[in-house]
Amino acid sequence: MTAIQHARVLIVGSGFSGIGLGRTLLASQFTDFVILERESAVGGVWQSNTYPGCTCDVPSHLYSFSFAPNPHWTSTYSPQAEIRAYLEGCVNDFGLHPHLRTGVEVQDARWDEDSQLWRITTDQGPWTAQVLVSAVGPLTEPKLPDVPGIDRFQGKVMHSARWDHCHDLTGQRVASIGTGASAIQYVPQIADQVKELFVFQRSAPWITPHDKRLTTAAEREKFWARPLLQKVARFKVYVSKELLVLGFAKQPKLMEILQTVVRKHLDKQVVDPALRRTLTPDFVLGCKRIVPSNEWYPTLQKPNVELVPHALQEIREHSVVGADGVERPVDVIIFGTGFHVTDIPFADKVRGLGGQLLTDHWAGSPRAYLGVSVPRFPNFFLLLGPNSGLGHSSMVYMIEAQVRHVRDAIRALDLAGATSIEVDQQVHDAYNAELDRKLAKTVWAVGGCRTFYQDANGRNATIYPDWTFRFRRQAVRWKPGAYRLTTAAESARR
Ligand code: NAP
Image 1 (tube, helix red, strand yellow):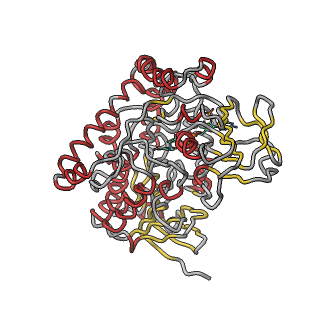
Image 2 (cartoon, helix red, strand yellow):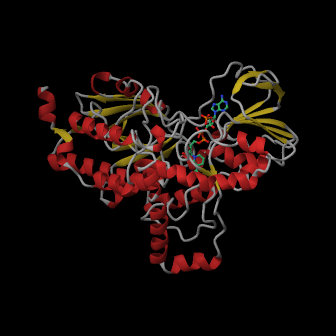
Image 3 (cartoon, protein in one colour):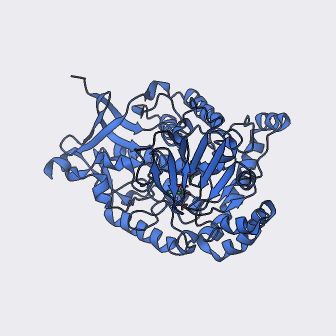
C-alpha cells in the first residue's frame, strides 16, 4: 500500500492560478505546500491548447503577472508557446520546482471532520492536506456536442484543446464545428492546407479588427532597460480594457453604439450581401465573447471553404449532417465546441461537510464568495471559481486578487490557532445576491444570446459583472467577519 503523503496546502493545477498562488505563498514565507499537476508539464490551458494559431487575444503586457513582467514578448499578443515558456520561466524564477509534482491526477477529495483534514486520492497514491485549493480553471475539460453518431465516425476526431499534430491535414476534407474564440484562430491557419473545409456556424460571432503586431527589438530593449515603462504600458492596456465595463455591465445600450463601428469590419471584408447577412450576429455586441480577427472573414470566402450556417446535427461513419439536412463527406472532424464551464467536472470530486459533493451542493448553479469559497466546504478554495471570469480583460488580474485572498485565509487560520475556516453563509448569500442584481443589467443578460456563461438553471455563473478594481479591492481587503474559524477543541465538541 502506498504511504499517505501530507502537505499543509495542496494546490491542484499548475496554470496561471496554481503558479500565482505558489509564488504568493512563498513570498509570504509559507513553504509547506505542493502543486499537483495531471499533465507532464506546467502551463494549464497554455500547455494543453496547441492548436494552430493559438494566441492570447488579451495584450501581452496585461496577460502576465504584475510581479513578473516580461520585456521579451515578441508580439503585442503572445502566441501560446511563448506564454507556456513564460510560465515555465516563472516556475524556475519563483523557486517552485521543489513544490511541483507532475503526472498526478486527483481522483477525489473528502473533508474529514474528525481529523480536520482533506483526504485526497490521486492516481499516484493518497494525500492529506489541511487546505485544498482547486486551481484547475474553468476551461479545462473539452466539451463535445451532444449529437447522435459521434462514436460511429470512422475518420479522425480532434478537439481544439487536444490537437493531434501527428495527424496531417494536407489534402483532407475537414468539418470544423463552432465559431468561438478557438475556432476563429485555427480555421484560418488550416484552410490552405486542407482540400475542403466545412465551417459549421450555429450562431455568428461578433468579430473586431485585430491590432496585433510584432514587437521591435528596440521596444523590447526599452522595456528591459526601463521596467517602469512597461508598467505604464500595462496600465494603459488595463484602463482601455476596463472602459469596456461601462458598456458590458453598466449601460449595455453603449454596446449597441459600439456595434455599429464593429459592423464596419464585416461590411468591409464581406461584399456579398447574402453572406454578410449570414455572418451578422443576432445578439448585441459583447453578449458572447468578442473575438478579434483580420483573417476570419477572408478565410470563409476561400474557394475550398464552405460556411455552413447551421448546427451540426448528426455524425455518420464518413460524413457529417447539419441542421439543413445536407450530408457532407469528411475525413476529419475538429470540435471547436468549448469546455465544461459551469458544470465544473472538478466539483464531482470534492466532498465537504457531511460528505456532500460540491456538484450536489451547487445543484446546477455554482456560487462562491469572491469566486473562491463555498459554505460547508471548510479549508477549500477555488481559483477562478464561479463569477470570477471576464469577457473583456485579463484573467491574470483576477487570479492575483484571489491568490492574495487565499493567502490571507491561511494566515487567518494560523493567527487564530484554528483548524478550519469556512465562509459565513450569510456573507456568501449577500455577495451572490449583489452579483445577481448587477448581472440582471448587463449585456450578458439583456443582449439576446445564450452562452456557456449560463449554468443549467440559466444563471450566469461565469462572469464578474462590475469593475475589476472593485473585485480586487474586495478580495484583498481581509474582512474577518466573512469567515468562521474553528479550533480543534470546538470541532471536537460538535
Ligand atoms: P466556445 O466559445 O464555447 O465556442 C463553442 C462553439 O461551438 C460556439 O460557437 C457554439 O455555438 C459551437 N457549437 C456547440 N455545439 C455545436 C453544434 N452542435 N453545432 C455547431 N456549433 C456548435 O469555445 P472556445 O472557442 O473554445 O472558447 C472558449 C473560451 O476559451 C473563450 O470564451 C475564451 O474565454 C477562451 N479562449 C480564449 C482565447 C484567448 O485568446 N484568450 C482563445 C481561445 C479560447 P453557439 O455560439 O451557437 O453556442
